[in-house]
Image 1 (cartoon, helix red, strand yellow):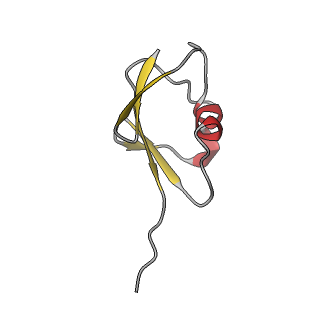
Image 2 (cartoon, one colour; image 1 turned 180 degrees about the vertical axis):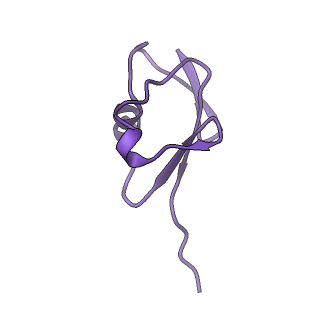
Length: 66
């Protein structure tokens, strides 16, 4: 199954994966926010969200500056 993760095509070997598992596999580090198909997904819903072929997932981390 192919998805887009942070603008890059990513081929997944499995057809059954939830958003939490995907983020763990991609090495997501706290703090972060995640959007699927341009819609914010609360962390409390990540376990329930099943990734679908063609999903576009953006992992967003805060940027510190000064």
